[in-house]
Image (cartoon, rainbow over all chains, first blue to last red; front, side, top):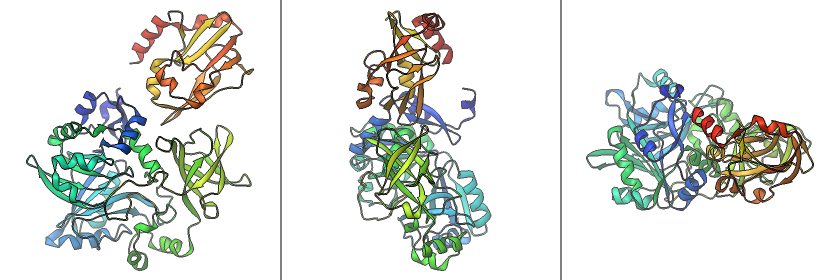
Length: 384
Length: 125
């Protein structure tokens, strides 16, 4: 209780209280982990209709080139810190990439959107301060770095998200997957992207803090939309095979090992010019020593993060990085890293569970096929 | 039931002769959220007081169910294996976990009655 006083609240904290949310500390924020419906109902409703998620803990950052250099200059500068092809981003398009370190490890993953005259970044809450320091150190000569404080980020996810959002903002339905634009709603300018972290179609909408509660209540008033918490967000992204930084990806994993090589376009792989380019180029050419894989325990017991993965001879070949129950799958699902020779789907492995070995099988990701619409091929947080 | 007893770990016990039925309290199931997996002991196993008897897993995490009293496992609620959600839907009824033949009835004296347990929960709030 006393520790909760130190937590940052989001602009939707009154709404969460009214909805009866169970709050949990997450990355310094007090966040709703679930509402009275419960994680499974929230998860299932998101897959069938639409869930509304408060993701205001995510960092929102605006990058503008100094001296009227235009978005191209900001993009060129950002490429010094990420292996993503940011220069190729056309206005209104977004891309998934990572901040890498000198060894090719992943400091954070992020979404980058070209808003025409500036870049808009969404970074993880837990690493936001580090990301800002990284941007300041690397780009402050070229770019203005503005952290968009006091803005909410509202995700509306699910097959019926488009119907609900379009009733408020009809033009939003024109966006295809991984596109973004800004529209006015009741006098507020709202940057909206068609993207998400659930494997479903949907939107992420940036709303000024003072307008966020009314906006979220309006969306919740639509028949299709129910609130969903971080618990459902986690089970949805796990079924979708999407990485969670600090768990499935971190400084000890490279984008190649994590199966995110698709997010490094050929030009960047060839030219380099980002931290860890040498290590990443070598792994792209020779193959990584280990790979992130989907794991399907054959029993009913969920296997959690940290569990050892053992190969056919009983030798430890890796560890589980995310694991739990997949409500849509109807059973346990997990992800982890294994030696590259054991990464083929169908490979039989054992996961350590309460001192025993639980049989499991390497499974192609995602566990649940994507429900997203539109033309883009890039998945956030990813897979190929 | 008024003769239901509770542990500080939020298990309940209902005694009938020398048989104690054990489950988790409504408060415990509410804290856990959706139960997705239950692991039950073998019948015939002797469990000590406060020894882990079962595992209950929610979407997010695994928790232990401890034996509030020592005894031999004489029956387990196998229906929970196929339908773990019973723990949420009816924690004091169909969501029971195990039945123990009690070794030392005196141990029951250390458990809380309904009223004491409510006061204990109020303290935790």
